[in-house]
Amino acid sequence: MTTTETPSALRRTALHATHHAHKARMVDFGGWDMPVQYRGLIEEHMAVRTAVGLFDVSHMGDIQLRGPNSLAAVQKLLMNDASKLQTGQAHYSAMLYPNGTFVDDVVLHKLGDNDYLIVINAGTREKDVQWVRQVIGGMSGVHVNDFSDYYTQLAIQGPKAQATLQKLTGVDLTPIKNYWFTWGQVCGCHNVMIARTGYTGEDGFEIYIPSDEPTSARVWGEVLAAGEEFGIIPCGLGARNTLRLESSMALYGHEISDTINVFEANLGRYCKLDKGTDFVGREALLEVQNSGGPARRLVGLEMVDRGIGRDGYPVATLDGTRIGEITSGSPAPFLKKNIALAYVPVAYTEVGTELAVEIRGQLVKAVVVPTPFYKRPKAVAAPITAPLS
Amino acid sequence: MSYPEKYRYAKSHEWLAIDGDTGSVGITDYAQSSLGDIVFVELPKVGQELTAGDSFGSVESVKAVSELYSPVTGTVTEINESLNDEPETINTAANDTWLLKLKLTSDDDGNALLSAAEYEKFVSEETGH
Image 1 (spheres, rainbow over the protein chains, first blue to last red):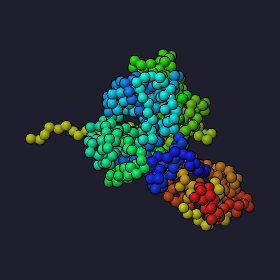
Image 2 (cartoon, rainbow over the protein chains, first blue to last red; image 1 turned 90 degrees about the horizontal axis):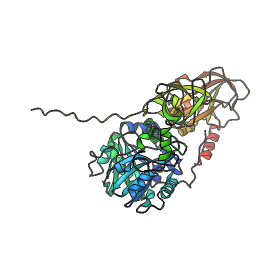
Image 3 (spheres, each protein chain N blue to C red; image 1 turned 60 degrees about the vertical axis):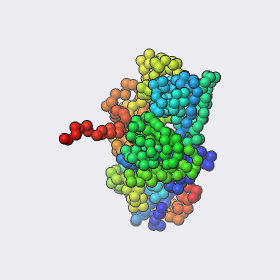
Image 4 (cartoon, chains in turn cyan, blue; image 1 turned 180 degrees about the vertical axis):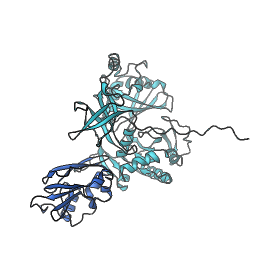
């Protein structure tokens, strides 16, 4: 066993002292000193699947593009079709290199006409901001602002997320659809962006509050108090990772990177080659598409025999020929199975294909399964019944 | 954290309890706490011969894999099969949960290992608090 010291050069969110007060175990995540777990990863994971959990995700970055040419800039920069967004709507998208691989995946929010907010990953913040400025270059009528340090971003996630947050705001949360957002007062803070987004595969909200320490700590405490009756607990990046993995959501540096293209990552549905703008990466992806698609693709694996496939473990055929690698692998606390995402040649991507994961020199049987591994149950709508008369 | 005085401790965070020529091996309270929720234990087969310092298996939490090292030299006589179904027992009772038993085959009685007090000091130095 080894333990790693956390050097003080790591960046901290406004809730750093709060995490220590909760006795969180901290880790270096992309240069940030972040809580990996508080009371226990499994307990935190289960709270989000069955009740509600609270995450500090202030390490995420926020880039605003504003001005009369901001839509044109966003269309050139990102692979999804931003012209389809209405004010108050968000979608998943990505910034690509000219060869069709990933600079980063993002969530794009349309704040208003000529006004967009791109939420980016923590570990790629500086690179992303630089890339945005480089791609937009001398384009006139667009102003780029890095607002990353202005927000404390809290994620309230789980079937009881709405009930929790509703106690803290006058805004009616019910009409906010998945991947839509609004603004309103939360815990006494004005004009808080309230988005029905998240990275857990569960219903939930992300709120963007002022990043000063007193406000951040106060809102954190009020959310925990409001959620107490529903069983809320603070959740760390450990649970965030297993939750996103069960839901088969990509993580930068694992399923997506500068050596993996959009089609390999199965993210083609968010890539609009025919949106009418020649975005960065489009030509290379057209070529991949026209030459019969990618040679390898991301698949879901479930371990059949005893063993846990983990990040970086080789994937092989049953006779031991190495054909690929796991990008993320872990026990899945809710599903109670050992699951993994892996890149393998397309010939091995069919559901039911038996493969092996090489675990410390041993071949352990696994099978290709459909993704996402976990899909949350659809909310049951109130039955429409004729009034009894 | 508690470290029973009757055990001897390895710097790789296993404990050893000796009874006659039999040694029982577990992982320390510190080890289980560092790992977090333990979900999987891989142990050797009965009959395997281990030299002090040999890797004999692994213990895995949701987040991490940790190799296990034998604190003494001996032959595996018994493994704790109940850990296949209930590996979380290690989290709840690390000091009372042995992973395997060895028949000691050398004069090594674990005296080179750390005492409870020495181990506690070692851990506090390693973690810096």
